[in-house]
Each structure stands twice: as C-alpha cells, then as structure tokens.
Amino acid sequence: MNLVNKPNGIGLGRLFKATQCSIKGFKAAFQEESAFRTELALGLVLLPLSFWLAQSLQHWVMLVVSFLFLLVVELLNSAIEALTDRVGVEYHVLSGRAKDIASAAVSLALLILMIVWGVAGYEKILTLIS
Image 1 (cartoon, one colour):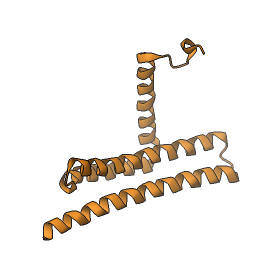
Image 2 (spheres, one colour):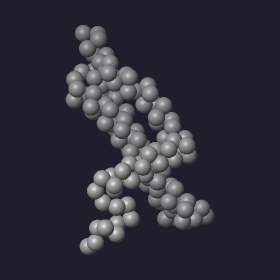
Image 3 (cartoon, rainbow, N blue to C red):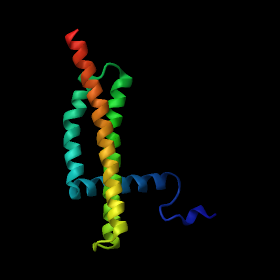
Image 4 (cartoon, rainbow, N blue to C red):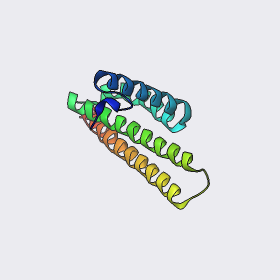
C-alpha cells in the first residue's frame, strides 16, 4: 500500500490537517446546530459546578466525561443528519430511521449525563446535611 498518495498526507502533516478538519467541524456545529449550542451552554453551567460537586479527581473526571460524551454523540447525530440531507431531503424511510436512531443516541447520552450528575448531586446533598 502506498501511503504517500493518502489525500491528507502522513505523519505530522496528517495530524495538522486532521486538526484543521476538527476545527472546521466544531465551527460548523456551532454555527449550524442549535442543539450543539444549547449543550455547550449547559456545559458553561455544569463544568464550573463540577468542581463543587466532585468528591475526588476521579469523580470530577466522570462528571466531565459524561458531558463530553453528550457532545460527541451530538456531533455524530449532526453529521448523520447532514449526510442524510445531502443524499436527499425528500422523505425516505431509511433516512428517517437513520435520523431517529441518531436522535435516540443523543437521548441516551443525555440520560447518562442526568444519572451521573444526579447521583453526584444526591451525594453532595447527603454530605451537606450530615
């Protein structure tokens, strides 16, 4: 296999180009996806709160990772929606299914976030009242 003909190059050049693509992706998600902006706004509240809620470094990491997981799933959901719309905006059962499944994944990521943060809040309340 000839690696020199890779469209994004190899080595550090590939890493640089991949970073540029990631930045473009974040910008596009922020500009075009209101759900992504809403979740980022949620992060502006949750991330400072995480320092107060966390009972250890590992606990803090769990809180932050659950939030980042939500963002990852939202980005994938947005990518699936964009690609599906690129194929065709007219209704098709498979396009609808793909979008619905991606949306369900976001719902599960939100559920994970609510469980992790809810338990952290519950534990914090228990420590404050005892």
